[in-house]
Image (cartoon, rainbow, N blue to C red):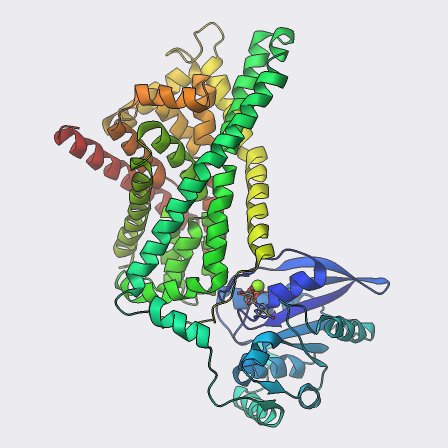
Length: 595
Ligand SMILES: Nc1nc2c(ncn2[C@@H]2O[C@H](COP(=O)(O)OP(=O)(O)OP(=O)(O)O)[C@@H](O)[C@H]2O)c(=O)[nH]1
Ligand SMILES: [Mg+2]
């Protein structure tokens, strides 16, 4: 099978091009460093099938960051029939050298000048034929986003693949031509083939930046935006969540109830009150999570994320981190795993490790489920969003404290240069894809962890069968008693302690486990919680859940990215200790104040 690699600088639209070419759904976003790993798809070309690989962005082929090494390793370990170089047509002066380097290495090459729409808008005119002669390969002007020039691009790729000879290099670095010569050639080419106004005016972007990057109002505006996002997620999400819960209830009453007479009591309890209710309660949060990702996708795809990095850079550097670390923390609000992988764009290992140490404190969507449930159960509708916001602040504070403590060992001296991409309207397809991705992520986690967790908790609470289900002499009761001495002092009773033990694997299990344990669901479970915990205990529980340990997938990713178990050990030990101490301080502080 022929192999085709897509190479280019970060944020030039490689993944957008790849998606349009193959119909795949590689992640796209207006932030340099969205793709950090290989992503492949198959493409029928004529009677052949070609494998197309979307690669991370690289500034040059000498690069040292982990994502740049991914690209180099790919070119060194796989014969490649065609390299499609994607360049941003509005920045040819500094992007062309990469195309020349690739061509000089001897690769069969096609160059895509992407973002034709923006180039046209800015009044840039490009003589593609002159460029093609100069580089020595076909050059096509396209807009991967709008689709203009795309048939020509496909044609050029098919033709170039037809007489392809695969090339595999032993060492990309050794084969590279000296940089200054390449840069000189690129300059001469751009001079001859590109006609651009002296200064590029991006009116909308400049106007927006004057407000959003304002030295005084920029940061408050950013926090206000985030606050509104959370408020919106909460307000819009609650009825959606009720809707799903209602549907699940109806299905239960109409379709599952009749089973009660047929199945033996224990089996019915296991299937319906254990698995169905447990997984169903977790599933009712999926709409809220999708909504959350919808807003995050908008923030990411509009280009505001890069502004957030810029605004927070000064503050973050006091903690030994930088603007990119902040963006990774924000991404971690979705799920910690991709955020950890996103740190590959950092060259300094110290900075990368430090960022990977703080990311697990990001309040991910799995924890959000737990907090939505508990805040609804124990606080008034007016208080709930504020409590939630306070938890987000705590999540950030814990991350910063961690950076301060660990920063002594992991000192960063990598200068941070961030390119500000122009603002772009988010693409609906992209935003919808993110939503869909979340649903499949949930289903994946459901089959992997949630069902298993719920089943286990149900078994623990219902056995030995001679005991009263959920009673102190069941296995769950014994486990709770074991955890009691540790969790008692922070106000967490035996029942909830068992739930926390399972939360170690995945935080999504927590709510499902509560259902399996109490045999209650929805409003009934909320009522039960409100009777068995006061708000101080609930808050202490939530603080503990927020901080206590990254889930198993996060740990596995930390291990893979840092290539060290010691690092993972430090991360778990530190978060457990911090969680316990924070909950302890909160719990006893509140009690002392008379709550
Ligand atoms: N105006 C315009 N925007 C585009 C075009 N192609 C891509 N974009 C936008 O450019 C941004 C970056 O697109 P991606 O496809 O994620 O870029 P990438 O090169 O894969 O980026 P990394 O994976 O981070 O290296 C997104 O906001 C896209 O919507 C285009 O032809 N015109
Ligand atoms: Mg990409």
